[in-house]
Length: 194
Image (cartoon, rainbow, N blue to C red):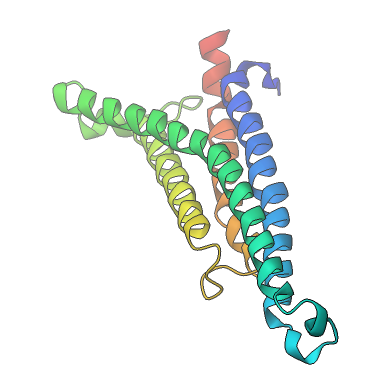
């Protein structure tokens, strides 16, 4: 099986894997570490330690320092998340354009035509489902991550123990969807680019 003909889908998949690994694995671990530091400092009873005599405000100063570091990293992560919104817009536009085309030409693009496929060409309705699924997954990933970032200092929503898990949720499903699209369209793409 020659994958060179599925380069467009393969390129999207490779880009998403690289981007999501950088964004979700590396950044979430770093943020989780900062949250853990903040949680540990907040739990310490400073007044019962000898350091409180010389530095009574050490805990509040450390919390401010860690919180400011969290804030600076949040700005960087938000900048990394912005391309997800752009990817969502592109996929959403493709979905909207396809649906508008179907509405404009209902006699040519009826259900039977959309559901018809060939051995090497997936039915259009399946391809539209891929676009719809990817649009939904990217949208959900974007908005849930923004919610986590907005509530990063709310331990009932996000804390050092659940951040990495929350952050990487839904990412494997998106990558699986793109991989499935690649696998199911490989023969179609071979014919198209042959």
